[in-house]
Each structure stands twice: as structure tokens, then as C-alpha cells.
Length: 258
Image (tube, rainbow, N blue to C red; front, top):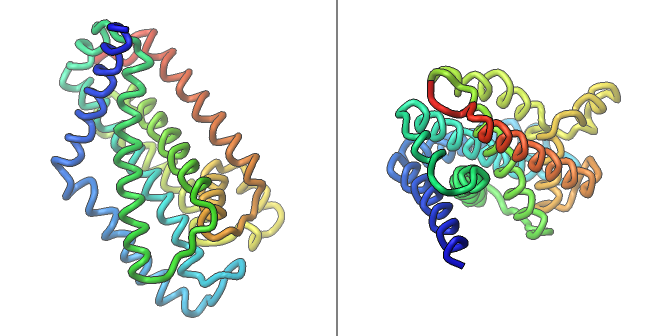
């Protein structure tokens, strides 16, 4: 019982540290995604969307809302963990945590919980911003919540992996710039993959962000281009796989500062 309580306190401490960290610099972590998304709604939703009309049977501005919410969740959960964990390595405080009498799995859980918290908060604020521009129905709130937590967990773990291998601050921006951003913009945020030629549609299905965005869009609008059950299984499987990889690397001592 005492051991369980000790582990709970340790995990909660890491989570609170992460939350306090991004709350302290909220002008850098919380506000910019909301402002950026507002510009998307103004430019793509109102100006361009009025010319496009509808997509998959709904107004274009409504169609892009789920994608923009998930884009914010993905980017912020990833950025929070990668930057925070690398900072711990850079400041050489990670060794103190690794030699503490708590399992490495709980260290990972604490960090990704902070990423989930930031991603969820920013996603919620983006959704509130969207309501200022258009009405949004909520068809399946359970699926929305599930996919938010799964995607935030997945990309928090991806950020943790980036933080493990990063040797300098520039390394934590390489993956978001050259991998995460292209995958996000090609992930069905602004268009339906059914509008693509067959080859490119099938090619897009290899992008995990397509499954995340479309499942969240189904939860909100009730429309989808993919099999929802398969998308949830794929996202969950990738999350478990990344957790195992991160735990293996942490146990090997690869995360220690150099």
C-alpha cells in the first residue's frame, strides 16, 4: 500500500511539474495555437470555404474544424514532451529522476500525462474558437474523447522518443518540421481523401494522422471516409508500440544526458 502511494505521488509530481511548466509560459504554449487556428477559420473557412461550398455533405468550415482541433492536439502534445524531456537532459536533472526508486514506466507516464494535458487544453480552446465562427454538432462525444486521448498519448510518446535521441535543441524541431507538419497537412485536415484519385487515396491510408482526424471527424459530424474500428485499433496499437520502445530505451540508459 505504501509502495503504491509512493508511485502515485511520484507520477503526480511529474505531471504537476509539466502542467506548471506550460502554464507558466502560456503566452508561448496556449495562446499561439488559438490565434493560428483563428486565422485558418478566417482564411480557409470563411473566404475560401464560401467558394468551395460543401464537402462530404457539410459546410466546408464545419468540415475543417475536427481536423484543426486534432492538429492542435497532435502538435502541442508532441512539442510539450519533446521540449520538456530534452530540457531535463540538457540541465542534467534526468539522472536524478532515473536513479529515483520509481519504475521507468511511471516516468514515461508522468511526461505523457503532461503532454495529454496540454494537447487537450489547447484542443478544447480551439474548439471553443471554432464555435465563434460556426455551429458544430456533436454526434458521438465518446469517440471524440477517446480519439483525443489516444492521439495525444501517441504523439506525446513520439515526442518522448524525440527527446531521448535529441543531442541539441535543434534536434527537437527537425521531426515536427520535416515529418509531423507534412503528415498533418496531408492527413485530411482540409480535404476528404475520397476526393483524391484511387492511388493517392490508398497512399493516404498509410498516414496514421488520416485515421486520427477522420475518426475525430466522425465523432463530431458523423461522417467518415474510413473504417472507424480499424482506425481506433491502429492508433491504440501504435501507442502501445511506442510506449514499449520508449521504456526499452529508458531501461537501456540511452536517455541519460551526454
